[in-house]
Length: 344
Image 1 (cartoon, rainbow, N blue to C red):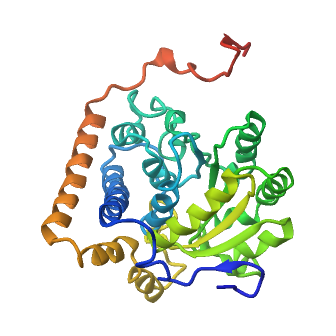
Image 2: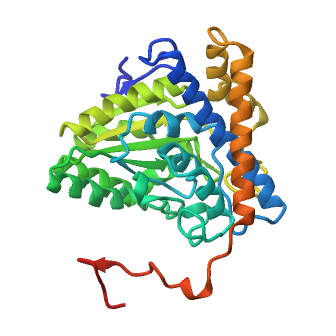
């Protein structure tokens, strides 16, 4: 239904029971969301034990956005991500073992141990290594989109970013350029209400990021980001538009991160009542309850067990993997031009 601002709005829960996916597909969506949730929980414990170096930004609660959007993408489509990239990476197809090894800083990691948590990615599955600069992907994505347009492919690229990035100049520049050039891009805003510890309503007089879309002549839509079926449905429409030359599209997913901004954040800037309200809309619990109507607890419990086994395997793989060699520190640091090493 219309939001009254020239922007479409999907009411919470509207897609439950209406998305065109069968039970087996829904079970796979559940498995993938659970894998991301358990990955996040596992790596946090490993970080506290000192096994994972560097820093960590988690996305518990936001799994439906990553899984729902990436579910409608083809392997040849691309995504850009943020400093909170674990869910996007796993949803787009980055190998679980390689992702875990990357967080451990090991040579078998998807970026050779050089990227760590904030720079996960793998071009072979269509994920540009994540960009930790807030709003950094919003202009980089236009290069990918322009390349697809010039090459006349039917590829689409999705730019994930947070509500905080929507106040960066890069957001406006990227969206305007993409609009003027009619680029095959879906801008996917994960509005989890806070930019670090600052509430979005304190930084913007408009409550919805998507309401900025009409100013650039593009379609905007507000979606329940705690409902993977609603996310998938909206993303499917947007990707189809972008693929056929009717893009770009700005999607705003109303979601919530259950964890703090980063490790050590005790979340003193938000109330526990607010957190409890959002946890009642946990996308994984909601989909499991839906699946329980047609599937037995045995099937669901077996799915849970498969996720745990895969994670245990990934952790052991990462632990046993070698550290990068010192002599490889500069490999891959410079681009190549027509197959020839460029001059540093």
